[in-house]
Image (tube, rainbow, N blue to C red):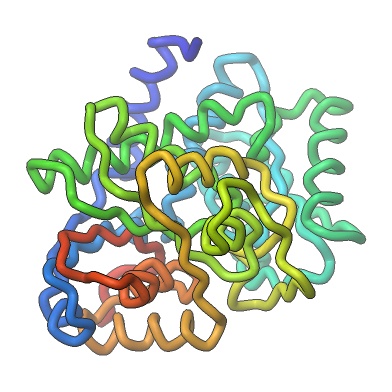
Length: 314
């Protein structure tokens, strides 16, 4: 059970730190270009670090502070690390970010500039996560990793995206398209809609991701991607080890939705098309949430795509 006091503090601090309450806007030029009946974009790039992860970082930090802890740790390819570093800086806490050595992690300098300590780990994402969790126990740091004992907070933080969409749109959309990494984002949004008695179909979009690969292959379970390729483009998405696999698959299957695989070149092209049509600077890994819609048999529906990036250009 998540304490009501923590939830109230989270809601208050979201307003104070300008996290959440991001814009839901209609993308009429993209609708015409991609032949989609109606497309709304949830602009999570308006959060301070440019991604939805600021929401979960804040809730984890507040929970840590309530428990008397002054440091947080998590594995990251960069985006979540930047969120944790930003929130930790704002709340006068410490952030220890574990990054696999082979990851490009272009946001490493940004993390360090905000006082976050980057720990490079020999090994893959799973190895780095376990190292982070072990060090959390040894040093009494707060374990903010996806899939940790604190995972319910991550899901709760993302339910607010669903609530904001429903409030801004006035009803449930037909489909909600979400970029899938570890699975907590699509899982949390799905939980949020269900808590309001709504059931939009959830479209999970990713590349080299075992949860999406499984659902796209017609299964109700994950399916490891053969010859897994992790690149600078798909780093936020890719992996056969996912911390919240069941949440991701549950969202797609229970909602009668599906999974769509979007390749690196398509992710890059999607970001370019969104910029050309709507003037938005969107991360390629996130832009797949729009491109995935174009691969459905029917686009004669109302879609919401959840996007992360740096917002409006110019």
